[in-house]
Length: 150
Image (cartoon, rainbow, N blue to C red):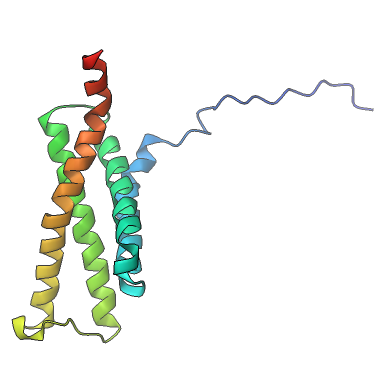
């Protein structure tokens, strides 16, 4: 018979239970890979909102890790850069999958496939990435704004 007392389980998180902030650095790249693949194989019209939220959460997590909770213009610029990079990578994954499967872009009259792919990557990075980064910067700033109003 074992007479040793068993330790009671603790429900408080330990260091190993909490996600490391370093792991958040990989949120945006992982989300970009997933979003690029989803955009290729799924109906984008049906997935527009979930896909935007999916990428937005990845950008927010990585921007938080990159800024270490700092506030200010530099942190906002980092969040915007993370947004642009995430959307550009997602579009690059989409373009690579699209072309490697033998599919063509619809606007053949605009030039060769490689130039269309570069244009799509740049447009998605700028026109989707910048607003996503701005939204992430504002969300990261939200706790400071709520404290100053009290």
